[in-house]
Image 1: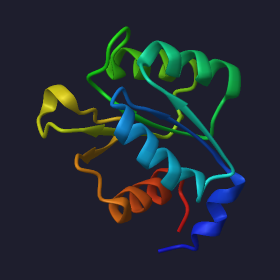
Image 2: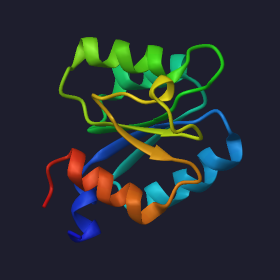
Image 3: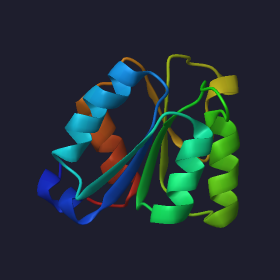
Image 4: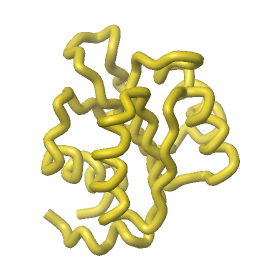
Length: 123
């Protein structure tokens, strides 16, 4: 796996409605990425995306206000090449996207890093 220090040059948006998960993975991401933006629902995530233009997006699907799928569609209308990872507790077609990398919860941080490197084209 590539050196994690390379991620310090990138920003990430993490969207998760579960406060404990958002806080814990947010801390993990803060140690690796240069900038981390946290959102509690899709609407907040989309607003942060529009204002901050992160290099990478990690999102849950089932959230209040605006779900992850709706947010993803809006983001991809802005930038169809935006790297996105979906974190979900479900392993079925309804909760995944062929355009995005899917990580099943509970999140294995090694698999998450592999997915991030893969999506960003970092070898």
